[in-house]
Amino acid sequence: MLKIAVLVSGGGTNLQAIIDAKIPNVEIALVVSNNPGAYALTRAQNAGIEAVCLSPKNYESREVYHDALLSCLQEHDIELVVLAGFLVNISEKMVRSYKNRIINIHPSLIPSFCGKGYYGLHVHEAALARGVKVTGATVHIVDEGTDTGPILLQKAVEVKAGDTPEILQRRVMEEAEWIILPKAIGMLANGEL
Ligand code: GRF
Image: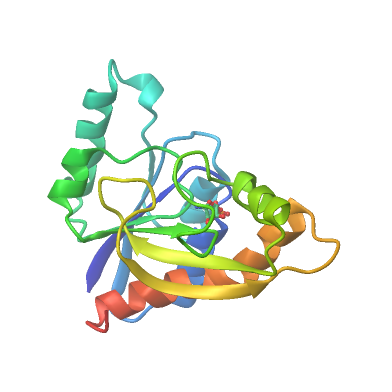
């Protein structure tokens, strides 16, 4: 069994997709949110998964916060960390400690519409502003940069006339994110990636 932690900040639809996928040889051992109001915490509780909120606001510095986050993962013997809409930048110490064992889902086809400032709806606003006809999602390994690590899986999604950022965001989630994130976890757990 690969013990994974899923780190979240918001609604947790990607977390839900991972839960629903019932991935062979994977145990979702922990869900961590930085945001006490994240609905993702409720999703975890409903699924009987241990869920904790670690908010930077409750720590005297970012460094102390990041140490607490890393300790929490290590205490739970987490082997793979999944960033699923986690809006806190991961520390370099954590990247080193979990080298090649942190993955992230990004709602575009990297290297388009990624890097600093490209999160949430901003990604889809930028795709629509540029007029691309195809967008999608990417699962990648997290390194010290922002969205710069090796790409594991990608899936393309059509942009349609009349799309708003919200409509496009939903289509990218349904047709790409909720499929490739559980798939990548399963492939990593079963030695296929
Ligand atoms: C997703 O669009 C994901 O790609 C991005 O943050 C969003 C999280 O959504 N990194 P949810 O909390 O999984 O519903």
